[in-house]
Figure 1 (cartoon, rainbow, N blue to C red):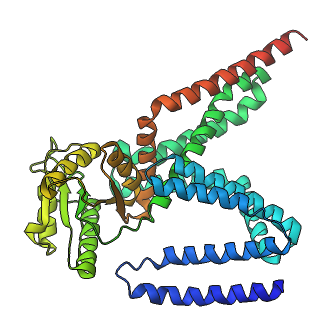
Figure 2 (figure 1 turned 90 degrees about the vertical axis):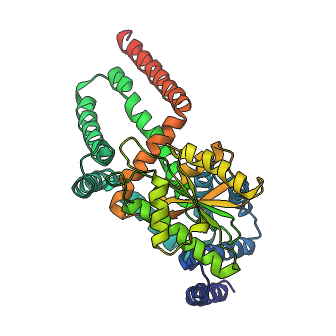
Figure 3 (figure 1 turned 45 degrees about the vertical axis):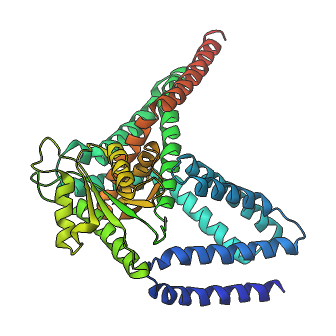
Length: 404
């Protein structure tokens, strides 16, 4: 019966793979890859539950409870960093469960999945760090060549140099320094490990947040501003934010005949001739958006002010606070912008405009540093605890050596 069920599930899955793209082509939002992922997950969960039920056990309830807890936390408030941690805990518990199920069933599909996972983990352990270094150096060269030599564009290069220096130091220190000194200098790798986990959680929730699918019932779309070229011209990155808003504007208009208003948010920088929002409005007008569908906010200097001042304008224009709003920005900036919306007490999630791949590593590093600085007290405490722990271990080792 198990073999027949596997075949049936496989056939149903393949039928869905062919139907979903055709189904989504008829929709205004054609994000068929997202629904393909959901379909695969659903079929796999059903298959795993079937294997478990055949054994007359119900251990699948353990990872299921973690998944339900994540979904509860996420849909209650999407704009929380802890959601990334909760999802990764679900992944760890889920992989552990699948490993135990493999030993109990010897299922061929689970075996293939396990071997694939083990292969990539071994590959990661053997060459992962060196592959990362090669990628960071390559990316730094591309970014510097295409985007210029500003400090903001040096982050991948600085990270690559720092990791290289750490590897060299770690190699020689283990051979030269006594054990107690090696423990003392172990503060650095432990702090690096801590921030690696924090970054992984941040990256996880940032990716999940990209799948936000707002309904076509919005009253406003906030477009977050950025710097202008020569103080007056909309740059490509900002242009993509505006075009994302226009895309949603047209989609909602076609779906409901009730288009939202587009609120351009951005003040005038010290080196700019006009407010960013004025240039953004002109860009949208040239794309065919009617002037009465565009609002402007001209006083903000940063993303938090974008959200606060936009909220005030929407409340005044709507005549209340029960409006529906979303915001558009570049995909790498999406989650942090959501955090600022939360800080401004603005109930709005975002949709992200695509960014060239070469730009993403540097941009995500910049976003991560900014988020770390938003919670610097928490991270300083954790780094302090790590330092104290390693100092105590080092002192203990020193006294053990000197009193032998």
